[in-house]
Structures are given as C-alpha cells and as structure tokens.
Length: 329
Ligand SMILES: NC(=O)c1ccc[n+]([C@@H]2O[C@H](COP(=O)([O-])OP(=O)(O)OC[C@H]3O[C@@H](n4cnc5c(N)ncnc54)[C@H](OP(=O)(O)O)[C@@H]3O)[C@@H](O)[C@H]2O)c1
Image (cartoon, rainbow, N blue to C red; front, side, top):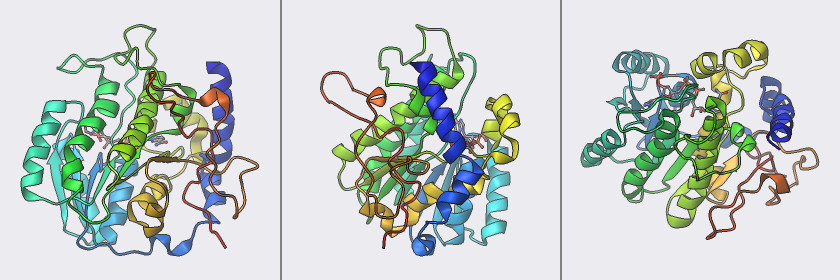
C-alpha cells in the first residue's frame, strides 16, 4: 500500500509540484488577487529567515505589512532581517528568537508577545526533516516536536490574540508528502517501527492537516488553511533530501514560486471566500481541470483518514483543491 501511494504521489508530483507544474497552473491565476496593500496588518511568520518563509516575508513586506519573524538562530535571522528590509524598503520587520521544538519557550514567547503586539495572520512555515531519531531536552522526537507540537502550541496560544482582530487567518505550510501516510496516532514519538525521517515528516504534515480541520471547526472567527508549496529549491530540501534535490535539479520551483499559495491564502481577499480548514495543493487532478469545475469533496478511498472513533474524518487528499483558485468566468 505504501509503495502504491508513494508511486502515485511521485507521478502526481512530477506533473504538478515542479516548476513546470507551477508555470502551467499560473496561467489561470487571477492576476489581481495579490495586488493588495496591507499596511496596519501584522503577520507572524515562523522560519522567515530561509527558503519559502523568507520569500513569503519579502512579498508581505513589499505590500506594507508589519512582520514578526520567529526564528531559532540569532545570526541567520538578523542577516535575513537586514536583507528583507533592504529588498522591501519596509522597516517594520521584527525579530523574535524562539526554538519551535521547545513548547515552554513558545508559550513564554506568546505571553510576552501578546502584551506588546497585535496579530492578524499567523503563518506556520518553519519545519524540519531530521533523518535520524533525535530527542529534544523534553525527550520528544525532534520532527514531531517542531512540526506538530510546536505548531499546535504556537497556534493555540495565539488564537485569543488573533480573535481580537478583523479578518484573522492562520496558514500552515504542510506538504504534499503527507499523502503517502495515513494518520497514525499510536506512535507519535516514532518508537515502534524502524525510523524513517521522510515518513515521520509525512506523518507530521498529515497531523498539521488534521489540526487545521480541527481548528476550523473549533474557532469559526478565524480562517484556517494549510497548503503544499510544491517542490521548491530551498536549503531545507538541499540538506535533508540531497538525493532528491540533485535528481530534480532545475525542475524544482524557486522559493518564490513555492511561496505563492501561502501568500494568496494570507493576503488575497478571495481566499477567505473558501471554507475554513482546507488543504490547498498542486493543480487539479485530470478530470477536475477547467475553469468551471468547483473543488470537489470526493476522496479516493485509499486516502481516507479517520481520527479515533469520534469523527469520520476525511482529509483532502490527492488533488481536488487548486493551487490558488483558477479564474472563474
Ligand atoms: N521546499 C519544499 O519543496 C517543501 C515542500 C513541502 C513542504 N515544505 C515545507 O515548507 C516549509 C519551509 O521549508 P523550506 O523548504 O523553505 O526549508 P528551509 O529553507 O530549511 O526553511 C525552514 C525554516 O524553518 C526553520 N526551523 C526549523 N526548525 C526550527 C525550529 N526548531 N525552531 C525555529 N525555526 C525552525 C529553519 O530555521 P534555520 O534556518 O535556523 O534552520 C528555517 O528558517 C517547511 O514547513 C517545509 O516542511 C517545503
């Protein structure tokens, strides 16, 4: 089953997640969607010093938004902040040093943050794929601590801050890689099977999608979404998946192309016309293409996910959600 899923996912990825997939999808983007200015709105972007996060911050800064970068490394973060200010001409870029694999540090950060700042949009972008089993100081598996628990704690702590504002949004940068894993809540610390960083990462990204659906139901005043950026050439991919990075070469998207969907979800007025809680990824599946096709709620049976007994829950899998909405006439 895993082999089937992985092969089907990779074939889909070659069609849709690559640079050519982006170029083909972008022909149908609504051009005015990102022609917005956002002075007075405040955005918190985790991992904004690198890759997709950095590309996202530059575009928000160019549109006049106030940006809070949440990063773990002071030097890397300060360097990125300087470049972002130079490139965008926007000085309202603030830096907070937090290791997102440390839940206590996140909680403490939010306690201070909310005394001084407002927040309209949270972008959970930071993520990692650690390829051997490492534990944090709290004894948590590192990928889970960063990708799932960190996202959960940060979002939960900031919900009351977001709820005070107009048009609050939370966007989580998940991954199409989650399509190769069903939700497994029985081994959150990856103790019971041979460790694979790729599969743990896929599981974490699935958990983010499930959390997003949960938050959307529980907090209707906030618009939640999660998305797949495609396969983009970033330091994260270069370091964690060197073989994949080398074999894909020029076919990878740029970080800016990878940031397009997160920007659309964070900035475009059209994004909140979509229901809260969706997963946005690549292009339509064949048969779902075409300007008039609405996103479909159907799911291929092999990709269904159920959470325990309480909730017959089906994640939005193999397609059906556009990477940005296509133009509708
Ligand atoms: N690139 C792709 O093809 C692709 C595909 C699917 C999903 N994604 C997702 O896209 C997001 C951005 O990744 P990227 O590709 O742009 O990689 P990247 O350049 O490595 O960016 C990841 C960012 O997360 C930060 N980070 C990692 N662990 C952290 C921690 N414990 N505390 C605070 N910050 C931490 C990194 O900080 P440092 O710079 O200090 O390491 C970096 O700023 C991730 O969630 C990734 O899973 C990427």
